[in-house]
Amino acid sequence: MQKNILILYTNYGTGHYMAAKAIEEYIKNNYKGYNVQILDPLSFSRPIVNKLFAKIGKIVATKFRRFRGKLYKKKMYQNYLKNSWFFKFCTKLFWTKKLNKKLVEFNPNIIISTQVGPTGLIAAHKNLFDAKLISVFTDYGLHRMYTVGHEFIDIFCVPDKNIKQQMMDIGIRENKIKVTGIPVRSNFINNNNSNKEEFVDKYYLQKNKPIFLFICGGGLGYDNAFIYFEKILQINYEFSYIFISGKNDSLFRKAKTLAAKYNKKGKIFGYVENIDEFIRNSDIVFGKPGGIVTSEALNVGVPLCAIEPIPGQEINNSLFIANNKFGFYITNIKDFEYFLENLKNNKINLDDYKKNINNNFVKFSFLDIDKI
Image 1 (cartoon, one colour):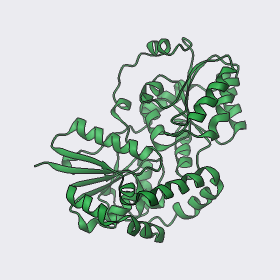
Image 2: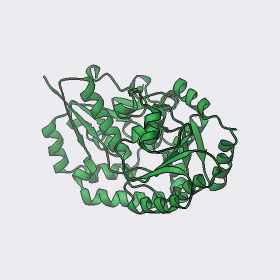
Image 3: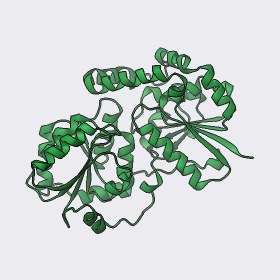
Image 4: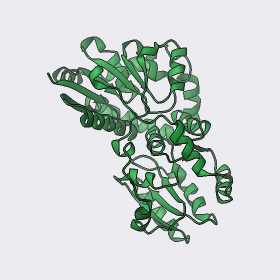
């Protein structure tokens, strides 16, 4: 008998969707007899309200960074098992007849959620479904919203053993917590025998020189990091660069104009589908440390330099990278200049970081679906 699996995400950034797609791909590639659907329940239920929430979240993250940092510190990193009035309000707001009908008709046996909003929404209405609920972490840090409704969540999929221990310390049962890494697509897991010489020739880069990959944030790109790209172009050092602006056309044009001023070998791209090819053939990735791009880089063994993370989970990701010697955490332009000088003067050996990643990083390996 065919089983139904529903994978939930939200459109608050591209990471949660990419994680959902990675899990869908994993199930379809490795199992038979499952009907898999992906759904953004918040957009499906109340598209206008959800769009407003997403817009407010983006404004707070980019324009009011200090306020967001204080809010997270006060509200998100303590009282983990305490109920949240705002979360209760949201679960009532987004639980509509339309969404209820959709779920009843699909009748899922397993519900997998890659974002805390849908997780809490289902947890609050778990009595309506005979389904296992799995909460998948997409950042390298625990915050309060991950644990809301924990008593109704059957399995937590967490990135590493430290988060597992932290959850056990606050009272969540060990048998509910599985260390699976953060979901990435199969092209970041499988060794595709990428040929760096062919890659260099393909994009007309410098032979036998380091390749610096600058990913300017998610699908939309972000302007905050643009000044850091210029600093890279200014250093007196032999390397090639690749700059990916995402879907931000303005950023793409600015990068093209800026790159034309400097005598450096490199390429500027907008949104790309083959990001795995670029990461795999680079020596270091620079950019915003979202959970997914961090996981993608580390899964293929490439160190990441986290630049000006958004206060909250991206700071946790940055600390995870730096504390484990999987890469670097940069908070301001002066620190970045110092970092580049050390790189230029061979005081930083990127090969040591690559070896450490390959030896100690937990790569994505999902649950055995047949045993759930």
